[in-house]
Image 1: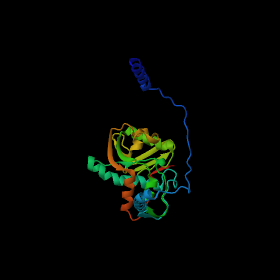
Image 2: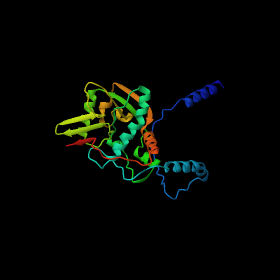
Image 3: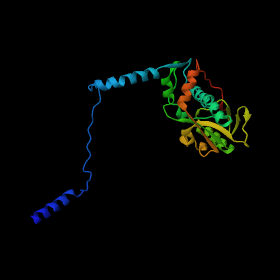
Image 4: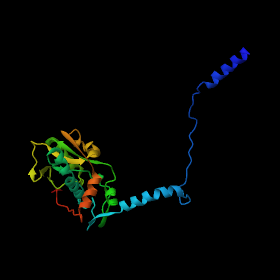
Length: 248
C-alpha cells in the first residue's frame, strides 16, 4: 500500500510540473467585409442615436466663405495658411495675456499641418475636423533673437507657404532679408513670444528652433477648437494674400 501511495505521489508531482511552452506556428484567416455581412439589429439600435447625433453635429453649418480657401494659391503664403495663423493668434492672445500680462508677437505653423482645403460655400464642423484632424494644442514659446534668426533661416531655406500671422513681415532679397514684427524692425536685443502647436514645439517638421525655449506656456486650447470657435464667431470667412512673406 505504501509503495502504491508513493508511486501515486511521484506521478502527481511530475504531472503538476510546469511545461515550457514554445510557439509552434501562427495561423491567420481573412474575413471578407462586404455587403453580404448583415448588421446585428440589437447593436444597431444602440448605436443609431449616437451616430445620428454625431452626423447632425458634424454637418452643422457654422460659417460661410465666398471663395475656396486653400494652401496652394500662393508661393510663400496662402489664403488658408494666413487664415489659420491669424485666427489662432486672435483666439490665443487673450488667453496668454490673462495668464502672463504679456502679448504674443506672432504665430507660426507648418505647411504640412493643413490637411484639407475649404471649398466656397457653407462651412461646417466637418471642414474644421478635416482641416485639423490632429489633437494638437496651442503653446507659446519665448524665443531669443538667435532663435528667431534660426526661424527666419528655416523659412527661407524651406521655401514653403508655412502659416504666418499678419504681425510678421519677411522680405527676402538675394542673400539678405528684412524682418519686422508688429510694424517694428526685428530687435536683436529682446526675446519674442511665438504661438505654435505642441507638435512643432517638440521639433516636429524639423522646427528645432522651437525646442528648449526660454519659457514655454501651455494654453490648454486645441488648435481645432480655436478653429471652430473662430468660425462660429464669423458670418463669413475672409482671407487674402498680403505679402507677409515674399521674395524679390
